[in-house]
Length: 266
Image 1 (tube, helix red, strand yellow):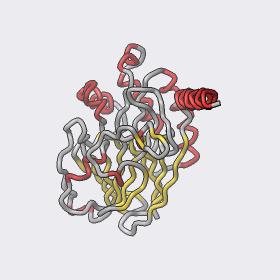
Image 2 (tube, helix red, strand yellow):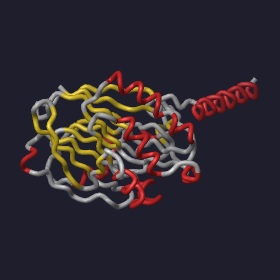
Image 3 (cartoon, one colour):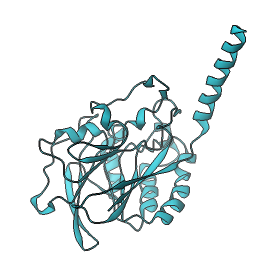
């Protein structure tokens, strides 16, 4: 009897892992943020694509249909675009960046690079995005007008690969600032409270997490409350679970499912 139960348990675990490997359907997570400093707007967040096959890139068409329905005001890309480098034998970095720009069009779009992009070929990724309408913000801030109000988007380079720098918020921004980075640890560089809202990815919300045990590895020096989902510290922050997988093509756990995010700011 014990042997039979053990066999059933092993089979169940294998079945769950197989399903986790093949379930690449992206779900939409919606978050409501109350912030009087920010203009009312809707922000789309995409993190950690980790493109590893042409099928992954072609899935952008499904996301495009969803984003048309959502009609966000701004689109943010939080890094880690490349998963398997061998994909570059079939498609170029410029073609990947162009596909992401098409996903965001015609909305203003901003991006940062992730650790995998920096490790792959940082300058090549910067050049690829420079050929599109997506503006990469590596330790810099830009200003745009939304709903007749000024909104600043600040990008901080990836802390995990050593490109994060303190990036002071210009006085002209006031409190209307959205900070974008890859590893949420990059947000800890600020000595003063971060204004308004911060967005990050990188953690995959653990990617592989077991009941009672939690995630096996979360590669960030950010504290646990910044590892996944919406949180409140000296600012409101979102760490997106993201869409792809790193090292092994598995996502396991209730919070780790492939997803993209809509932030509705009131």
